[in-house]
Length: 158
Image (cartoon, rainbow, N blue to C red; front, side, top):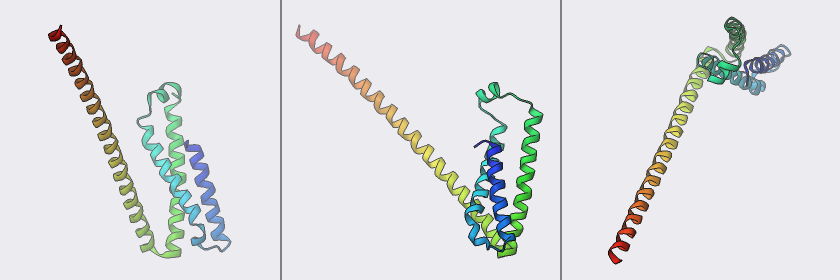
């Protein structure tokens, strides 16, 4: 998603949570929106990382003002930081600081395990491609050897 859509989705989820708390709903009933908000935060952070090294076509086609892009990122980041701070306060108020710390640690663990799974999958794909290229080369070489052998036998017979 583009950053504007991510921010709009995050803000909608945040406003839903905030309104729910104000009307007396329990935080447990809003885990879907909390998850949606954290997903948006993750997507925004990924976008921030990709901004520093955009693809070539984006550099050429969407070369806008660097200052404007930086300002937009800053404003969006600050908006998300404010929302995150308020959500942290809600979680701490509802469950205590230890629960919030546990959630942050779980978030780190899940991120690490996902990164490991992606790296393992990339390595597996690399191995499959390598083995496929190796088998193709071997078949090609055996084919050439067979043709040479066939011509040699034909020359010796005739």
